[in-house]
Length: 334
Length: 165
Image (tube, rainbow over all chains, first blue to last red; front, side, top):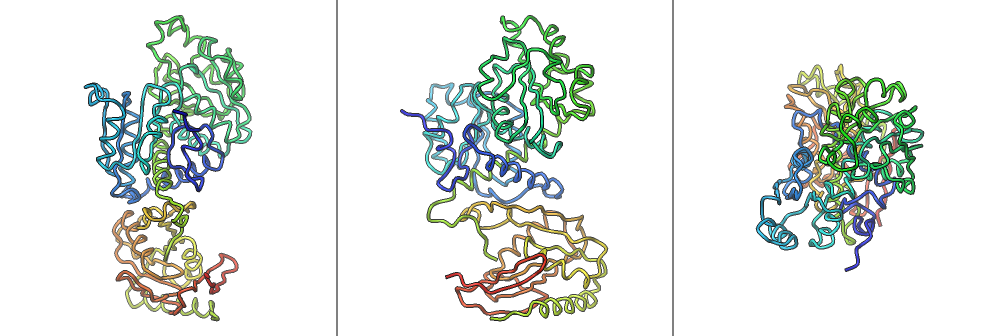
């Protein structure tokens, strides 16, 4: 079967989001709308009841084929703050492990009148596959697939940058660490490029920062000082310890010595640079505790922003699913 | 149809001042509903005994027609102070079905339990679908089914009746 183009699959006939699978093909207008709407949800934190009735009566299924407590929790909280009913399914320990096919699992969940699947999978393209095969009117949100994409993580990073820097134009951003295996870095690069930053530098050893990223508009740096020089934003990626055993890296300590973010190496960036990390942090492997907990760190802001971004994406996708040709585009009666 | 906006606003101010005195409301919070309600509320501030700046409310996330019409593409920020046990004066430009006001009251209660809510409306079109009525009304109008009120603002604030067909 021919795969649908990401843009065609993600947008409805009005150009509104109905799935959120990748940032590939989404333009600046849609990304900005996500950020604006997330800003609205962030201000909801000032309410004593931190909940709005937008998705009341809707059922959201967190469909996690790959374990991730943090991401699942923020999606669950986002859905609950929109008043949706949420079911968490850890597929590793359920139906598919008993031999049921993915499509059969999907059909069963659809038969339970689910309205949205939040999908995390170790295979690239899994969310896309599900979006192609699920029944119309069910929105699919990609919560990370293989090495391919993690679009909500990238958008919460964009929200964090915009809230701290107020803009994207003119900014220099360094993404440091294991770029090769990182779906976060791929989505971040797409988002930063679309939103108009001046320069994105991908920093790390040659084994983890392949040169083909230059075709996506990035500058490649294998030297940390050159990579961090005068940047406004430093994004550290988690170094996955399981890969230390392979030939890609000599050792944790070697990596930390060459690419670790410490107070000394951070000094190469601009004095008001912010430090980000998608978590979980390996202290003393990619970042020092002093920096992770220091004045430049916005790592915990990222977590807060993550809930707002996921609320924004979920509400927009549900809205896009509900829009039909015979329905007027959003208006209000007094 | 010719509408006298100045006269309606002056009438609202007089009614509000008298209402607050009658109800012993000494320190109210004026809340305008985006966007027209905020513009009208700005005009009413001088008539209300209050220490607080104008508060604003966007009811987009509280609408009851999300499943029919989707999400409004433009959301303004809701800015409300602590409202627990405070008197709230809720202001909008037009009262038609009453659904916006129902949504606004739901949102207000998510910020706390106010001592009271007073509803002030510039134009009441008398087409209520819910048991909601305004305490303060600038003018009561009866429009044809193809007519709508259009408030433009904030400066200058002006009003017109537009034909939808």
